[in-house]
Each structure stands twice: as C-alpha cells, then as structure tokens.
Image (cartoon, rainbow, N blue to C red; front, side, top):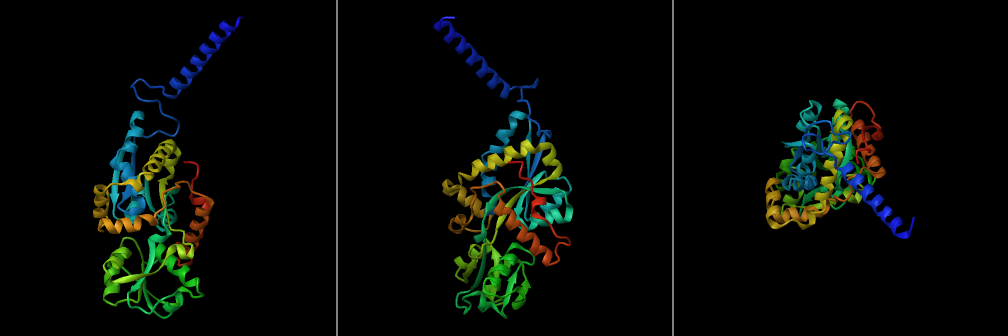
Length: 333
C-alpha cells in the first residue's frame, strides 16, 4: 500500500469511528425520541420545591426550563410541587407524591428516620451562616457566657437549635445553662422588639429582617462554631433505583444554574425577594452566605450529617441512632 492509499484508509476509518460514536450516543427510538439510558424508566418526575434562598439555583433552573429541556428529548416530563416547609414535603415523598425534593439537614434526617423511604443524594448548598443568634441592640449579651440563665428562643430540634448547642459549648456551657423557649420562627422580630426573649436563634430571612429594621443585632453566626448548615437533595429509594440517570441530569442542571446566581438581574432578584417576603437589599445581603459550588456529598458533609443525627437522638426526637453513611447515596452524581 502506497502512502496516499494508506492516508485514505486512515481517513475512512476515522470517519467511520466518529459516525459510530455520534449516532450511537444519539440513537433515537421509533417515536423520534432519544433512546433512554438505564435508570430512566419513569415518564414523569415530580420535584418538591420550597421558596427559600438556599435552593435558589433550582428556581433559576425552573424559570429557564433547564431541567425540562434536558429531559424532553427522552420523553420525560417534569412536575413541580411547591411546599411551605419540609414537613409536608417529607409526607409527599413518603406517599410517592414526589420523587425528589429539597430540604435542610434536620428534616432530611427526620424523613429517613420516620418513613425510611428516602436517601440523601446531593447538596443544594452549604450555608452555616444562614443561622444566627440575634439580641436587642442595647443588650449586654456579648458572648456565649453572657447567655447563661437567659431566656433564649429557637425552634426545638431544628438546625438553629443545634447551632445554639454548639455555640454554648464553644465557651464551656450547655443547653441546660439557658432557658429555652420553643418559638414560631416567623415571630423572631417581635420576640426581640418586645423584649419577650433575651436572644433568638433562627435562620434567614427572619434574622436579616430583624437586623435591617433596627430591632436587633447579630451575636454570632454558624460558621463561628463550624456548624454544618447543609441543605440537601432527597429522593425516594425506588426513584433512585429506577430513575438514577434522570436524577443525575436534574442535579447537573441545578449545578449549571448555580453558576448564574451571582449574575442575576434586578428584576429576578426582586421576584425572588418577594417570594421570601424580604426586599432586594436584604436578599443581596444574605446571598453570600450560601455556597452553591459543590453539589456532591463529601466526607465533611457526612461528618456534619452525623452530628445532626447524634443531636436528634440526644433530644429523643429520633428513637434510634443513625449512621449518616447509611442514609446517603453518593452514586447518583
């Protein structure tokens, strides 16, 4: 074979291999849709969503139809169910009304403990500074030690409650050294404004509203005591089994949308702020608290989740000890 014939043969082989790779990866079925990969069994995926800043990229993905556009070529449609809190969302996951959802670490663990129908498959954000302790502006409370014997409000069994525990322990105190009141977090402003409590341990946007309105000041934030502050993607076990590739695509589109958070225009910021019952300035002030850069569950996340599991067990909120490794699935993404 001369050199010219050899080059021609090589070109033909390269064209053939490229064609096989292209058409093999984009093979369509009789309906004209892309052939589904294993783990794409369901025709419909239902996502439970909550209006919170910690899940902002999912709202961007929803608004821009990233997930729908990625799944449409496979003939898979998306249904969005909106929930005010994680409690009804956990019920929906248990009942099969939703395939996947988003929530904080405490409700994610509680859902597993109560129903054993779900696993944690990814991180929506890391936000320890989403949790704060606020006191009145003229309060003499300046440190954890100053809280001894004081009346402190928090939501019992919440991540804010765990933050309060870690904050007290950072200066040698425990939860038993303060008088804890189980509160309605939506009333955080009035508790401080009306001197009903000496301090409130809560989460955004309730804290920023109190501070921005001049009723209180921040005493401490979660990162000061290495609070985990993780927010999670949760999915039904049977959905993971049969639709893991679909779930992977959804998480990938979330990751794509997370890169757009810093470039949101004012109109979209106003829209999100309205959903959160705060103004655009308040939203801008709390957005830096959320780290959307890593959706994969890492070893540090497992350690943080274990602290959450242990805390809920110590409070008798869950009746059996949980190994955090056993409630996550890191194979989806």
